[in-house]
Amino acid sequence: MQKTILCITDFSHSSDSALTCAASLAHDLNAHLTLLYTYRLHAEKGEEIFDCKKRKDREAANSFSILEKAFLQHK
Image 1 (spheres, helix red, strand yellow):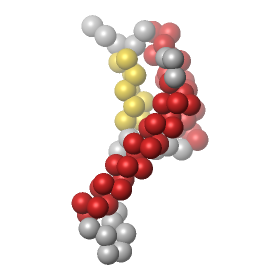
Image 2 (tube, one colour):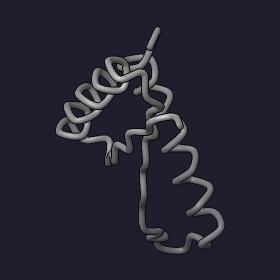
Image 3 (tube, helix red, strand yellow):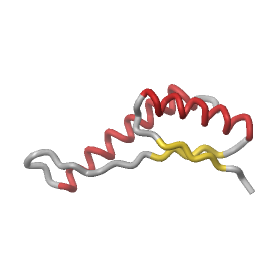
Image 4 (spheres, one colour):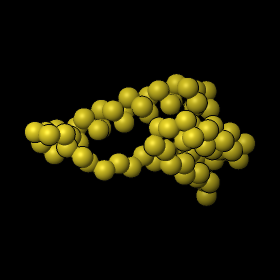
């Protein structure tokens, strides 16, 4: 059975530190690393909730891409 480590992020500096530790631990244990980001939808004034979700999804995808390049490359 494959070991899995779950690391939760809010894309803050503290979360980046936790991800660094989790990625190192996953590498050392030959474990799968799952990164979780949860958020609440808060539509801006005049914004439809569907558009708000699309915006948050784009922001998260961009943030995940940055994290992948910074922390997980070659791991």
